Amino acid sequence: MNFHPPFRPRHLVLVLGDQLDAKSAALDRFDSTLDAVWMAEVAEESTHVWTHKARIALFLAAMRHFRDALCERGLTVHYRALEAAPNAGSFAKELITTASRLRPQKLIVVQPGEWRVEQCLRTTASQLGLELEIRPDRHFLCSREEFAAHAKARKQLRMEFFYREMRRRTGVLMDGEQPEGGAWNFDADNRERFGKGGPSEIAEPMSFPPDEITREVLAMVEKRFAQHPGSLTHFDWPVTPEQARAALQDFIRHRLANFGKYQDAMWSSGDGLFARPYLFHSRLSAAMNLKLLDPREVIAAAEEAYREGRAPLASVEGFIRQILGWREFVRGIYWHFMPGYLDLDELKATQPLPDFYWTGQTEMNCLREAIGQTLEFGYAHHIQRLMVTGLFSLLLGVKPQAIHEWYLAMYLDAVEWVELPNTLGMSQFADGGVMASKPYVASGKYIQRMSNYCVGCRFDPAQRIGPQACPFTTLYWDFLLRHEKLLAKNRRMTMQLKNLARLTAADRLAIRECAGQIIHRTPSQ
Ligand SMILES: Cc1cc2nc3c(=O)[nH]c(=O)nc-3n(C[C@H](O)[C@H](O)[C@H](O)COP(=O)(O)OP(=O)(O)OC[C@H]3O[C@@H](n4cnc5c(N)ncnc54)[C@H](O)[C@@H]3O)c2cc1C
Ligand code: SF4
Image (cartoon, rainbow, N blue to C red; front, side):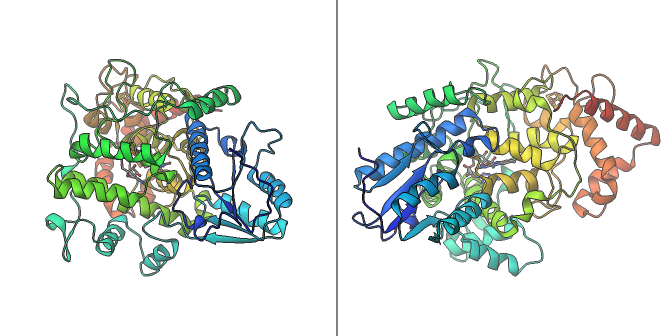
């Protein structure tokens, strides 16, 4: 296939690694005889945070498949592969090289998923003296402007009200003017844990063994990014729209019915390390975030399963809320508050990120499991991210930007528009309550209730001081003590602060000392 035909294009359409959508607005009115596409693999995107090997591989494999699909449709694609010499290593430099040679009349791109990238493209276009047309991203159901209008009318932003508005606007799970089943939210039905024996049969998600293109990428990443974290051993992710659709159908058929009930439950299978990291989750986030899969299709498939009696309403509503509600809401928050959002630090947290976040080597079973699984698969489900890795960082007082960079690096589905509000806002409360109405804090007892991680752990979640004390439990009480004044302003913290008030001065001192020891013995750079 010829990716570098010699003609001078009218429009050069830039397609970024998370914009692999053949129906993208960037390709509207594309004329194959006049226009060309530009795609570039650049090392900078894998190194500005120390990216997991599987995340690098996923983006590159999906990009190469997308390139080939465009070429098969007869589009001209100027594609810069990472190993093609000389690759300048950054978007800006690569774009300058190609655009200076081709001298198109105009550059066209769809709104990028990261503020930094949008700024970079604007600056580069201006250096080149070329017009840059930024088109709206139709992948999302709520545009940046619609979210801004929603935000303008409110003193406080809350996902629940945004979600109701989206339900009304789209007609999803509606019965006329009323929500299907008479309630907007069935969250209360969706907090079950597995019994002592763990989950019964769960159909393993559909696997997509790497084809020749992906195998080439995996070999290149293994060699070129050898020092990066993570493993490629289990790489079986969908890398084309067809595969992503098959993964969706597989989830709807085999796991959606139980998704809601067990969405907060965590489990270590014990038989074979991290044998079942996905439980009843869809593992569709990466495919959606790369735009291989349209969220409307995902939502419609789930709603259809409910209407045909194949999945209960509580599960289907719970699943749809994640996509129509949370996913759209966090994107709105990101664009509404950037670039300032990146520097928020409401709790003035200053601790460095513990080293074990990069290795999984810690005595704390829950963190070893969640991080170990992340290194193996580039995946952890929401509660593992929020209530294990995120919670520990919050309780320890890790600098929000350090934990943000870790999440951006380690998860296959990480793109800043979705990762940052989840990390800084929902998980670290660094935005002071824009995303979440209170900090998500709990002691080790929450982890004990929702998982089997504490079984066999050398710590005891019921103890807050002493050699057996669970670090989560000690740090939970220490967190309340450290932030007592600030939290007292939040009505949703009343219960937790009432319990804190029962502690004697001696209890408080002992907790502070024990927390100090934990911080002291946690290695970090
Ligand atoms: C600290 C932290 C960081 C996160 N970083 C990311 C990230 O980089 N990329 C990402 O896509 N999600 C992120 N999430 C949200 C969530 O954890 C993942 O979307 C989910 O675990 C992906 O697995 P899944 O596809 O099996 O999801 P499922 O549990 O099957 O959920 C279905 C879909 O709902 C959407 N969804 C669910 N929760 C959220 C949420 N809170 N925000 C946005 N979309 C949501 C996802 O698209 C997901 O595929 C983060 C959450 C936390 C607490
Ligand atoms: S006892 Fe504490 S550290 Fe150990 S697994 Fe349970 S919550 Fe984690």
